[in-house]
Image (cartoon, rainbow, N blue to C red; front, side, top):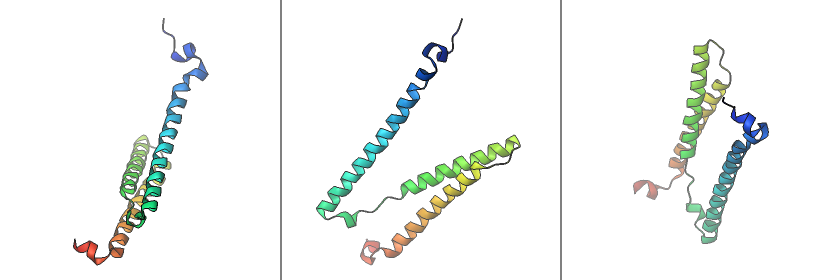
Length: 119
């Protein structure tokens, strides 16, 4: 005789681990943004904030992930014989993130002083 886990714990208690995971993820995101804020405040107080360059790798990672997820959704929808909807939007957002990264990288190269490019 096997009982499903929902009948043992109850419907509400079944979702407790999912809620704890979600709150933990939000707490981690808040903690990481707080650390970033404290780092920027320390750089401002030290007078070195202008030397800080934002790292664009997050745009590459986000663009590749969204593009891959979108293309995977489009592919599976085509193979199932349906019409793709959400996957197309995700793929285009991923491509836009990649385009933005490469545009900003080119703009940073143009704005960089000549002494920094010779080093």
